[in-house]
Image (cartoon, rainbow, N blue to C red; front, side, top):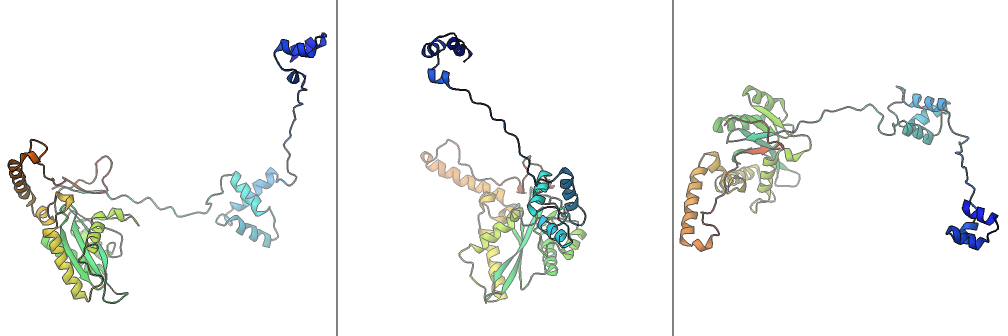
Length: 331
């Protein structure tokens, strides 16, 4: 606009001067605004640096470090001391990044994620206890179930009127006597699972005990999945008439599951076939059946090769790590 002012000062009409400088006359003749200088106002009630330091020292003192500002305010007020309002105390804490939890809290170490792998039957057993509804509302029986995670074979299922570490230890002794001593026994953190009785038994037998993390049901997937299979079965009753009925039902159900249930996780074999080493022969028999079917009706098969049969996975994991490393167990 300096050129415009020079032209008008030399006597050039404002319209012609505006055309020469390439702006509208309204813009050229508009008075520039005087910049407004704003000054930050300091509140008259603002605490001084010394007063803020005093507030911070008091709330962090051993006496008040575990109390929230509202409690500190009340205590000081009862003693005739006023350092500032509750909001002021919060503002001082916020400015010093102490608005979150200031109390001395217990620091619990992170729970180790159980990472177990089985490459053959008899290596890793998983066990848990589930409730079976009794004859009347509020009464329950306890089913102790132990499963081989590789073969999915139920190596033991006992039903008792109550949960007890002694009963759990007796079940383990019986199972180990029949199926052999495993290398690892995995369970959650129930009272029986973490009892000294069970721990002492496993230690004497040199069996590694493994536990799920607190409140993480996925750390015991085989037992939890089997309990769902049990309780979602059409034959599972709403209630059991007696302890004898519950034991009889569990015995029949476990026998049917072990010897007749074709499990998708183990190549559609039964747990008994995998547990006792019969799956390889069954695979050969299935291959012959499929080959014969293809020979009779080759047009029904998409490839020139015999159909594949489901294979048994080489490993069974509890929390398989991303790099496929874990506790490798000897076959």
